[in-house]
Image 1 (tube, rainbow, N blue to C red):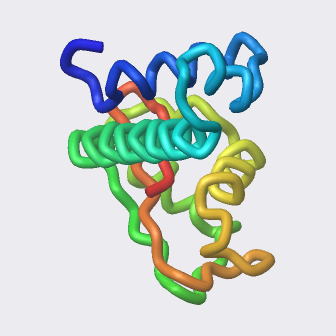
Image 2 (cartoon, rainbow, N blue to C red):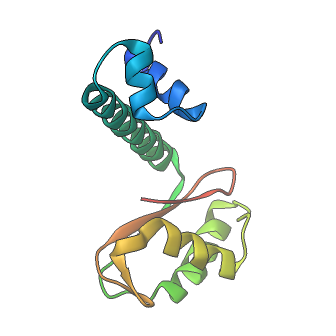
Image 3 (spheres, rainbow, N blue to C red):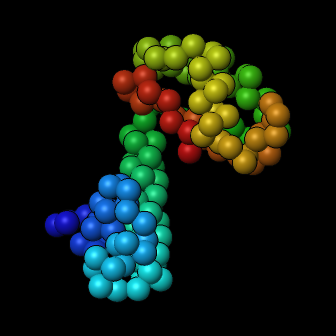
Length: 134
């Protein structure tokens, strides 16, 4: 596990869980407590989530187009804004309007109520036309 966000123990626990073993079975195999395995697994998942958020932030920082969606904005208006910004940046968007709205719903989650943004978030467009919700 050289140079990753996971310890060897965390990686081992995730590997064994992926093979279908329970926490109790892993604890017996590694000669430790189930509580310790639970902690290792939780911390491993937290580290992975942190790494994923870091990668998402890095991609957003490199993205040539970033739109701010403010509280109260209608998400059905975002695709129009995104297409205009993409045209100015000469980037081909890989999705159509329905897919963009679905991606926003999926990525913004609790920041939405119906069609309205309840909290602000960003929609980024990479140079390759990929859409990121941050």
